Amino acid sequence: MSEIPPDLRPKAYASAELFLDMLYALGNLADIDLESLAIYVCVAEATMRPLLNDPELVAQLARVDVPPDDVRGSITMLLVSDRLGLPRETVRRKVKHLISLGLIYEDSAGRIRVAPKLADARMSEIVGSVHAAVGRYNARLAQFGVPQ
Image (cartoon, rainbow, N blue to C red; front, side, top):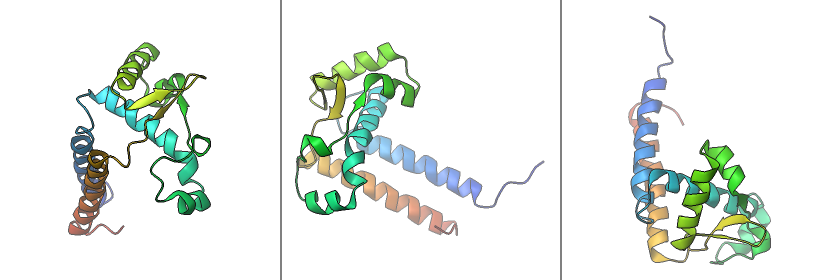
């Protein structure tokens, strides 16, 4: 039998808890399946990346509910398919459904973005729940004596 690092099992357990907590919180977004949820999160990350990777923009737009499109990122359905390992047709079909729900939109170039909803009370609650899940993850690691 081979040995594993002493912090590996606690990290695996805490990570599983975090993932399930995040799925539960994000499940309140809409009545969508797990693949659609993964697509939404992938598109959300791509939409927010340019703004949040620029500290000046973060400071300048911290309180703006809908940042200008020129500082928001986007992603193609093909790249979503590649990043998530999902068939292109599945991504296309599920993106169309997410668009019909008003969660994402497609621009004239065929790139997709999340619809700006951070000012929505429900979205704020979901983000708060995910943030709380990260806090529980950190507390669980501390409980197991795993340094962070």
